[in-house]
Image (cartoon, rainbow, N blue to C red):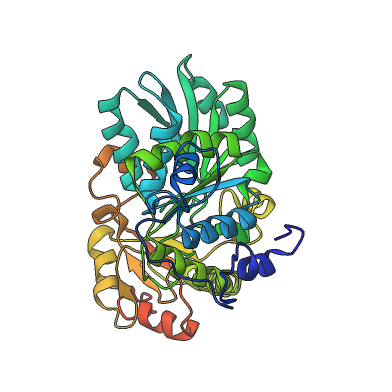
Length: 396
């Protein structure tokens, strides 16, 4: 499908390949393998001399439709789908790096990403230096002759810091390194990192791409020479594969991605403004607010603030947990991107397994709460949060 269509159209139409039956909805191909016309065709496909499906660990028509659609939305030449967001990061690192290589990563990333890059990858000889994402000069200072990758998620989870993709791209080029951007929070509806100079985009399709908390999935996107030759080769052999069923579910999720993201972002902005006026709230972290330190940057590289609102409560963990425990509507879960609003305490959940020092360096305090705004009525969300919130001091 031509990529000169607008994003909303691509989200519904891109990537569709109809079978001989002429189905209107995308077909779901639940098969482990594919048959060949003869031995010569089988040999040609296994030898990469003829395109076509071989085995669903690395070739499946439903998965390919998802890959092609997401690639169209991100403006990427190539997409490789994976079984989860973390397997996308793993496939990216294992497919593009080798023992002895070095990564510079923003301190403000998902807790499991910190554990993967800062812990597990050390076993394979890949070292990572974590630096402040808001200071590109520190990235350049962290570069070594072995640096091959810059890794950043923007906005950051859960601090909501926004990082300058164009500046980091320039620093990465100078270091002859690849810039990898996790675009999970914004999705291509609000931000397209490849157009800002990124080399690779990562997605946890589990979040907004599915949009209803149903299945796991991930994706790695970028230039064909980078993604196909590096990441696809790792996936073909190691097998962190997206199932055809999950790909089909996420395909249907993509059809409503734009309207969901825009509606949830609008509610998140209003919620953030409301939270700023509440007593007992020390700080609201939302890129769409003028009070956000990187507000101007966010409005330059994003088309909206997104659907995630984080805020710091006076009184630390006790006060934060009181708000969570008094909710009756919001879902207490660490997942996000759902049509149902979720609430979590990052310091004891998503970032609970990293060190207190690492949490402090990333700006994750005990009073921090993360709200992933869904599609419920905003007044109901406000009322639910109000149950456990501090009250204004009485007038004397």
